[in-house]
Image (tube, rainbow, N blue to C red; front, side, top):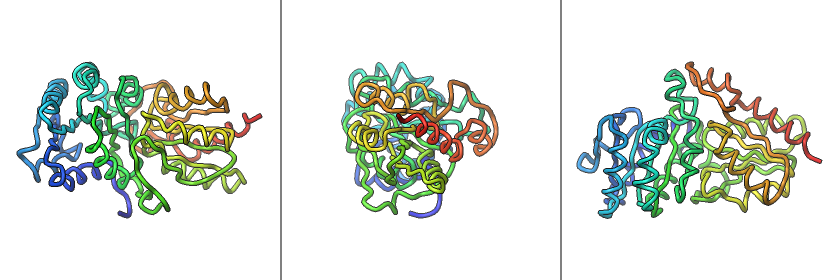
Length: 315
């Protein structure tokens, strides 16, 4: 892979590429196949694609039933409608009986842009993380998304997969020693003064923040935490002990998501300065993706400021 691609586009392509290898894969959508990119699977495998209409709650129940017949359903809608509107159905019909359903939330975060606050879901990572037994995955680029889809096809149990709307740079395919494994973070770059633990589109921004700080002599370690639950606590603990300060970064609320998971773990196991970078307990607003990200401080420059603060807090 090379260049830029939205993780939702990589996801749609991956479904098609894996269809023959996994005949038990079925795809459900709630009248958003164009946006979620499941239209590709619908065209390639029409008998295995089910448009449930604007009935997200019913879609979750249908998927739950399909999974009991040995199928591997992937349900698709916007993150706001999956994590928000269908929370009860996901909790009680899918997660409680621990069924093999993958809930896919497209257009996650504020980079949805012009759709505005009602569609900019920043709570989904926290909501899905709260559900017992629910895996939560947020890949950072197209290559990682492709690998995540196949890994989830081979994972038995409920999981939430977050997709982004905007195209992002692909870089994980060029990382030396890169290997995708559910529940295991990836060290993107080493460093000694502070660690950025990022997920989704913020991983690319963490790499840029690292470059900014390198010019000041601040050595930054960058970790791609594509799986938020279960958290790779071994990697988090190692980073905290070796660098002495941690910054988390996510295109989501700082309450309850990646930042919450890391802070909770380190508070009990290795208390070091932890600074959370994300959306600060507020709703989004309409604007271009770039403008909204800038407004809420989800930029490499703002992330670099968080790192400076974390370093200054070290004893």
